[in-house]
Image 1: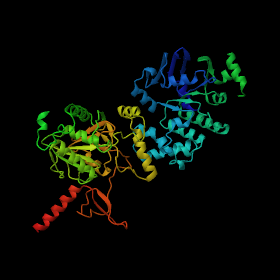
Image 2 (image 1 turned 90 degrees about the horizontal axis):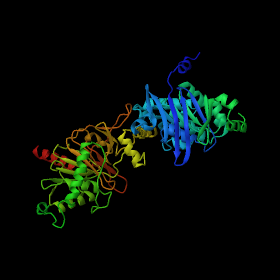
Image 3 (image 1 turned 30 degrees about the horizontal axis):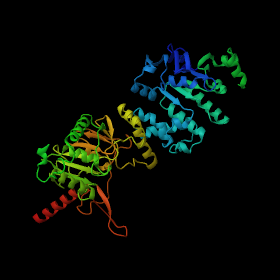
Image 4 (image 1 turned 90 degrees about the vertical axis):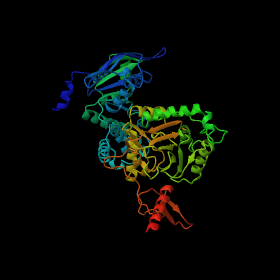
Length: 265
Length: 293
């Protein structure tokens, strides 16, 4: 039996706690009264149609946007950090050390003018790694892990295919072994076979490293394959949440029923 | 300040040192702050000078704010005292201050420079003023000024290391040979301006005060005397300076920075000291030794 999974299940404290979080854009609702907890090693999916507030929620969680109301707390070294109130240096340090963001468009997450090795090595160098050989070794290792030929370490990302760019972005984020990763439509814009490979890879990596992740997607297949728990959003409100299989196989809310019946999953 | 204007030799049509007294005070205040925070770029109200921006207006404004009747000014451009820019700036200050100028490194109290640090070690009673085209070492990596200021503020210098990494990955060594980034006092990364990296080690623990002025970019920064200045590198790719196979063709020095000079239409080339004063001194020494023997 895999003991690492066992110990995760026994972790008494959640990693992220969200209580009645709302974000209004003037009169309009971005998202309203969202409450959930995320445990270490757990993958939470947020699904819903476009405009349902998924991305707003993710931006608030990742401290890229300020919630209008409510609490977001992150467990850092046994302390609860008030995420929206984090001072800028602390937030940036957290962003480099404990968090990662995988963007939908790899161009937003990669430095396109910097080689693949440099892209992967940046976070290591941010953390103070000053041994070139060591950075190269880690970069090669990570290229292999995301199924890119390590000999392409000195190639620029713009010479990579879309799927490779996305895998490179994932390597760049995961190299610093973050504890929490935010992903916004990580498989968007890729063709189906590439999507499947990427999902396989993501699942393996996240499971291996025991990373907690929040994944925003409109694709129920992605949610089914990758996530432990699911939140369904509509008009800025969470209308249903629970274990992924439970939500998808036995949807309670009318909208979720509509959503699940609209595709084969 | 009428007293200074009466100094003999100064052009009476200009205030002493060209800038008005309030402007000099403003520049000095910025310089004091710069000295207090080694390597930090301090904004200042850069003025129009009788010279196009990008031709040394930052250095000229610092020199103008510092120069006094007791000073002796040396101006170098690419190590040479006799190039157009150096001669013009020296003449400019001779005219607006009536003060002494020199080509001798040892005689100067203020040395305004572009592209070189003199070969002769500087003393504690001297000030080195650099003309800086681009004060922001992170600019080529990060175009946003807001972002680069944040990066300095939070000491986020991983990106600068990425640049060195890319050099080694592409060329097998750090190919940056000028404006090689330095860490000042283990806090701020600063650009040493377009001096060759050959001169970087001279900045470390230098007894003289080093002041940097960027007129177009409206920034000054400073390295106080005896401040630790470290050139960035990797543990397994340590910082190195340029070296040459041959000595200077004129004075025979093996220790100085050499310029490549093409001497005819057939591509024949020689290497000579870029620091003209140093080269002349060595020849004079050799000549006097020859006479003595």
